[in-house]
Length: 119
Image (cartoon, rainbow, N blue to C red):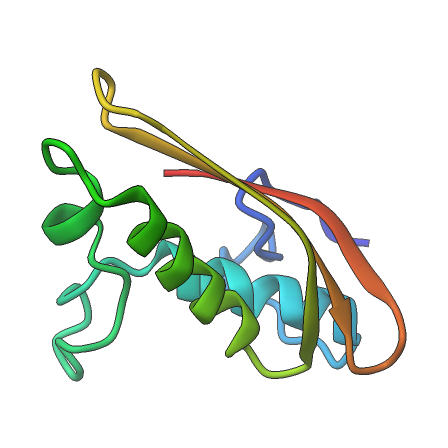
């Protein structure tokens, strides 16, 4: 078994390549991590992809309900995610740090619980 890193991506420790998997929970966890960690405009092939962290979240007086709605939409729009069981979003304006903790139900009947992402 390969080590699990804090960001929940599986990486081969010898080659530092991403490990591809067909295990639905692992696959969904990787998809969610990639989708939530991509900043808007970061990928040069599609500058419209990503979360607008600098534009809408890490700003003075962000609209927190809009931010939460946007993040929930990303989570629920991820392939094999059926429903959002729980969701918590906190933002430390002084540190410009966001923390997302959530649980989801998956298409194969399993679930991912207490996924934590710190941005």
